[in-house]
Length: 528
Ligand code: NAP
Image (cartoon, protein in one colour):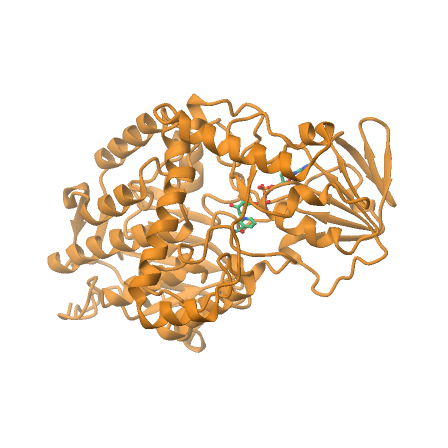
């Protein structure tokens, strides 16, 4: 190991295994970009960032449906260390997020590490060589001392298995595979789903379609969106005096913390915050929808926060337009020319839009097969022994592995506070690895169990267990009925813990490694 090596590579040993890379990051969205920035800060330079899509940006590359915008104000929904003074609106449109991702990747010189259009199929820990073997669907094998998965929570689109859906003769569009330029003018359109995506999309389709029928299974809590174009003078102020943008971030983050974190996670202690959010959403609905029957249908009967609430000034109002209908009778089947509901009605349509969200618990967690020590299969273990990850980032028996989209990893406030907490964890841990000149680290079973006990106890106060979530149909809950997505801590608490966790919670070993690694089966020389 040289002084510059962050994690001992074994390159100075004779007959010693040598991985192709120091680190492989799977996913080039904001998670993978943040992780790679942190790796580089820690001196890890030999990095491959492998992405299944044809460009970087994750969610913000894949999604480009009309109306796409952030629903966390942009001063907060961005890296704190990389503020963008030039957001055009308080809630920036999706295309700006994509450009922001490109800007950050360029600024931190990440593109040269990226390979696109390659889907990772499986990863295996090679215990004797102390590195990961990572295999792509196209047959490429790479090896790396570190594996980081940043594959997103909402990355596996869900297409419902509604009887007859394949027989539909018109156009079918899932929101994650938007057909840019599709003109709904003169069409009869159905949208299935009323999640955060539909809330943004429905007002846009309502402006074009002759007839729009929205199929709602579960209503969503929607609060007003205080959105406006950010004047040029304010953008210039943010650029010239960055402290002003920091202050704006602090104000917005504090408000969101109250609404999205305190009111949800501390439901037992702060019911008033939760009830305040419900009152706000109900008043918003009442202002926009005068018809009490329609209002009733659009009102959730589960507590605020059981499923992801959203922000919109146009969604409720869309249902008052003469060309828009809300259908709450359940879908029985789909015919070649329309949708049949349980009350016997047939809604004839030309285009079917599936705003049906994502599969989290079947095909994610993890997004591909990952085998650690002793052949342990991460996905099977999570399903057999409860979903768990120490501090939402590492797992016992999976050495040198950071799983960024883990159980209990999501901070609840914004994906950026999640990744920035994880970057702190990576920094602290790799700093210790370097100090010890180690080749491997692994979280202890004891530390992992302690963290799981702690989050389980804390979540007991949350709306998920203390509120009424029975009718929410929320993806926050896994098949076992456990809400294992959100980390039940305040955002400042999370950031503090990620920077100060006890280093004894990890075991470290190395630098000796004992076998020679197999060469890549397909040379990655042309690829990063
Ligand atoms: P989602 O919240 O999971 O919503 C999917 C919708 O499809 C639900 O209303 C669901 O009904 C419905 N659905 C699914 N299968 C169905 C079936 N067989 N029959 C009838 N209805 C069916 O997905 P999403 O709207 O794409 O949003 C996912 C997440 O993405 C959000 O929670 C948010 O975190 C994120 N998001 C963020 C933004 C942003 O602005 N930043 C924008 C969009 C999305 P049930 O509720 O009954 O299951």
